Amino acid sequence: MIDKLEFLLALSQERNFSKAAELCGVTQPTFSAGIKSLEDMLGVMLVQRTSRFIGFTAEGERVLDWARGIVADTRAMRQEVSSLRKGLSGRLRIAAIPTALPMVSALTTPFRARHPNVKFTIVSRTSIEILAMLENLEADAGLTYIDNEPLGRLRAVPLYTEQYRLLTSENSPLGERESVTWAEVGRIPLCLLTPDMQNRRIIDQLLSQAGGQADPTLESNSMIVLFSHVRTGRWASVMPQKLADTLGLTEHLRSIPIVEPDATHSIGLVVPRREPMTPLATALVAEATQLAATLA
Image (cartoon, rainbow, N blue to C red; front, side, top):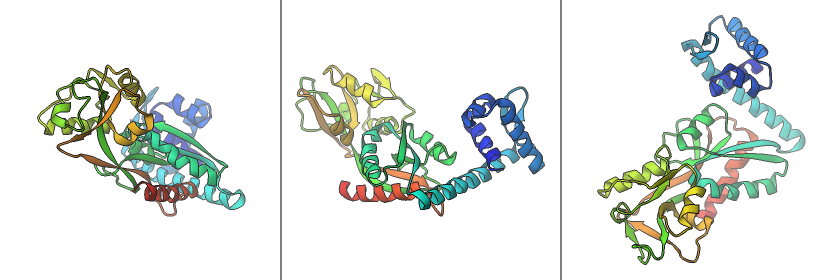
């Protein structure tokens, strides 16, 4: 039955029978038969479909909630049994907001030193996507904002506070300042993250509170794209201080504190709140707790 519940989760993720079958490593007829078998077993229709996937029925949505818990517990049990036999192993899937990506290595490097048989998959996602991935068992942990997103059934470990800097050329109009206000930042051309990113929504809100409005000359969902433009000396951007420090400043590029207000937001590790937690999640939370102490 577990494999059929896995099919249901894959269909929830892909919203397409052929793609879900591919994700599960089976043929589409085998996949469709598995879903039909689950429906027959439970005595209800779970999926609305014609020749293609339309959506889940009300019963299907409820079964999907149960499936997430059952599959998560099954995976946790397998991990724990495996770790008892041969130590911690497996693949740890971490989703991070773009501004937190440089901090991922501060978690994964010491973690791998302690658990060399663990492999990692790191993906960049929006804060909303990270919450959805954790709920749908598509990720084991996330690095995201923890003070202005509804965390629901997640456990959070605060890591550091995000503070904001104006990155601009020393020859720009604000380039020689020791600090700038959000009102002043709102009056210059900027390159910023796309509006679906929480960092961008935060910046938009701060600019609005200062009486301005973001009107970026360039938008991207990649901080690397933004920073590569800023490094030319012909663009300016607003970035978190830790990100700017990690990416490194060129000789003629300045990172200037933005004040009035001195805005901060908390970034942390989030994992599903389940008891017992998987061995991988337990070890990662322990690593994050140690890291937080060094960043305080």
